[in-house]
Image (tube, rainbow, N blue to C red; front, top):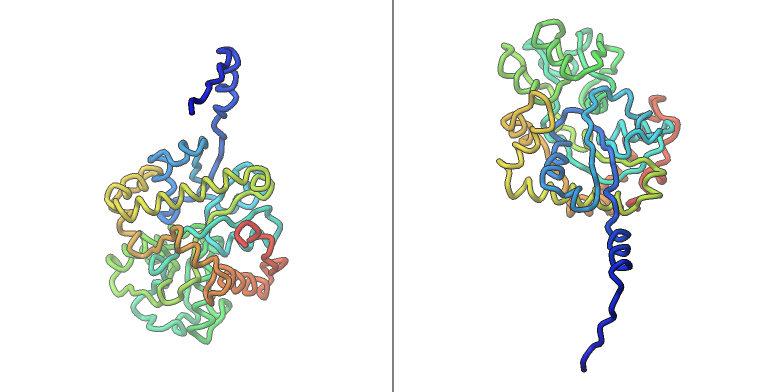
Length: 320
């Protein structure tokens, strides 16, 4: 049967086309210089954000002390950082919602000590440098609690305010031990005589994970953007798995003084989480679900007086 065509006046057709061609949405994401977040640069380079109608501005902000204010005020809509700081920020009033798990450290963070310190208990009375605002602080306290008879008060702990600076303090002989991450971790082990890792994140799994959060109000008003950003991440991880060498170049391109070789070295101590991995983590029936892992973190910090609440239902409202 022949179908009749409806003739639309040109003026009306042009108007309809203009209305349907939505303007790209300006979106801002922030994170610090860390390989775990860098697949977002793959998403940007490959046009995954652009294809979804998003004009993504990625800002590299090293001062993590500003993160809670940035995500709460909506100065940035998306923020990537470690899971336990994300939980602490939420528990202390930040208006954020969990979107997805990005990666886990499986050896990329460690506690490095001088030759005379053979065990965690040998740290008693020694000077250790770290960054208390970093995710590795939770790893350090967990290691002390589970692997020694010590508490933080048994050491002379110096808060450097920067993990890289903590590593450099150890390599220059200013401290007996330090909590550090790659590439300083490998550099210290290779260049400092007698230096060795007392513990790494591989010894204490699920202590250092990175996650993406979104401003609460923005998520409620723009659920399609949240979904598109998550989809861009999953596509980026697929690209990374299929084209690692090309991916490393893209991942390095967004950071200053970071090379593809640096990225390749860091990746060996990381596990990236794509679509299927996140589905598994978000299954509350799993013993090591993201909900169980996060509750352990919240309870830990609540006990230490660092959290105002350990109730995380609202934090996970987008994925439960």
